[in-house]
Image (cartoon, rainbow, N blue to C red):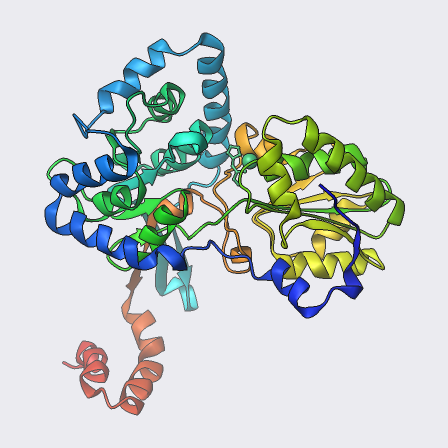
Length: 428
Ligand code: HSO
Ligand code: ZN
C-alpha cells in the first residue's frame, strides 16, 4: 500500500467530488430488490423461505427463533455476556436522557390559550441485525435499546438465517429486550418486517444498518412504513493539529477501515510533519491488523486519504462540507474547532476518545447517517421511536383574542365555514 499526503488546495474537481459524493451504492441493486420485496409482500413465508435458500443457502425451519436468543444468552462465555450487559447499561442510560417529556403551557393574555405537546411510543418496530461476517451484536443493542427506552411494546429483530446463528448476536437481542426474533435476512427481511407474513408481524418502522441489499430494501418500503435513514459504509474524519498523536489518528482511521473496503477514512491537518507521520503509522498499523486486506482497500479508496490543509480554518471548512458519520477532533482547542462545525453524526473529542468507544460502550448510538446525511439529520435516538401530538385548549377570551386573525385569514383563503366556526361561538 502506498498512501501519499495530498494538499487539500490542489485537489481537482473529481478528487474533491469523491470525498463529498459518498453514497450507499444501492442503485445497482434497486430493481432486483424491488422484485424480492414484491414477492415477499404477495407470498409471505413461502417467499421468505425460498429467498433464504437461494441467498443464504439455508433451509429455514422455524422463522420465529425468539427462544434461541434466550438460550444463546445462557450459552455464551461469561466475559462476553458481561461485556454485552455493561455496554447495554451505558447505552440505556444515555438514551433514557432522550425521552421527551409531555408539556403544556399557557400562552396569550392571562393564559387564555393552553398549548402543549404529548409524546407516545410507536407500537411496533423492526430492527435489522446484519449476519454473516458483519454480524454486529453491538448494532443490536443500538437498535433495540432506544426503542425499548421509548416504550415501544413490540420490538422485532430480523437477522439472516444460518445453520449456526451467531450466538453473541442472539444473546445481545435478549439483553436488549427484543420481543421477537426472526431468522430472515437481506431485502426479504426488510420486506417481511414492512408488510408482515404469516409468521412475521408487520411493523410501523424499520431501522438498522445493513448491506446494500438491505439498504435498497429500506428505500423500497419507505412510504409504506417509516425508516430511520439509508446508511452506507462507515466513515471517519479526523481533524488534527500539530498537538495530535499520529499513532492515535492512524489507529482510528485503520479501525473504521476494517469495516468495509468501501469505508471512507480521512485525516485532515494543517501540520505537514503530522500528515507524514500519520501516513507512516497508517501503513504500519494496517499491515499488523487481522483484516489488512479490507483495511488497505478502504485506505486506497478515492474517498480516503491524508490531507494537508493550509490552515485549521481550511480543515474546518472541509469538515463541514464532508459532514462525517464520525468526526474526531485531535487538537489543542478542540471545542473551538467543534463550534465551527455543524454537520457530523457523532463527535469524538480528545486523545482518549477513540471512535471504538462510541461503537461499543460509551453509551452513544453508533447507527449514524453517512454520505453527508449528517447535514440533514442525526443518528438513531429515542426520537425515532416516538410520535408527538399537539394539544390545545382555548377559553372564550383566548378565542376572542384570535377571532379577527382567524376569520380574516379564513376569508382570504375563501374558506367561509372556517370563519363561521369561530363566529358561531360568539353568536347567541
Ligand atoms: N462503526 C460502525 C459500528 C460498529 N463498529 C459496529 C463496530 N461494530 C458504524 O458506524
Ligand atoms: Zn466501527
